[in-house]
Image (cartoon, rainbow, N blue to C red; front, side, top):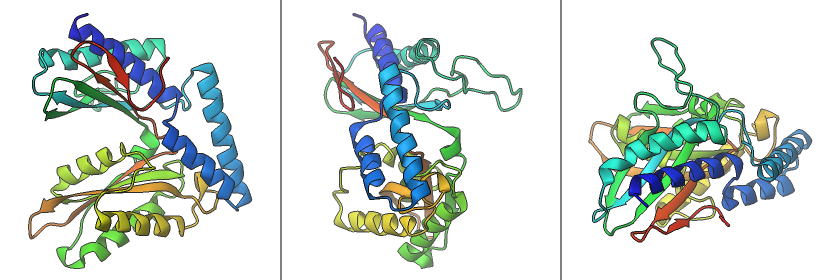
Length: 293
């Protein structure tokens, strides 16, 4: 099978998996939140969310009507051939998935307001590339919903405020977002680099499994502190109050210019949809986030 055909088929499957079945780590975090939530209204919302997840899996239909703007992350082995054909294949996969899954058409020209009708358009689906060693292709899809995207925030804070300023910015952002991003959320937080670099790293941090600790002890500690502080706001599930405003916080960083201290906060809603697969040189496909029969 040609690489473009294989990538297209895998892309369609990843989109179908992402919007109909949450990764196990997200499901388990929501189940734990339901067991431990003490606020009646918050617990009711978590119960409804879990029922919705179960129904989506049983019927193979999207768990949310907003199936997002499509973002792909690619780790391409440097020895892989025909890498120039992958972007076109993923665009075709998006068009097919829009019709077959189905996905809601969410690609709108910001000037003409015209919807393309198939989730493709200028820079959509957006594709992030990373060249790695080897001859495999790893593809991850992140369907990013509008509600959580609308409250993402970037702050160019004073370098003198340091980590304390970072913490204040993140919690202020959570409080300002309130119920808008459909909590309980996952937060991707990144500091440093530049404005574009910080937001890129923050959004990519959303791909990290909730049950994996940060390998950097200092960042792991910061993630715990931000998690505890965000949940102390009491915003709770769907903004109706409770212990669980966030399911997790994932932090990353880049070295910064001495005069700049950019902090980015990317939100993901409770429907933390992502799906990954690895295509091997012999054409076999290994699905990394979901069990595929």
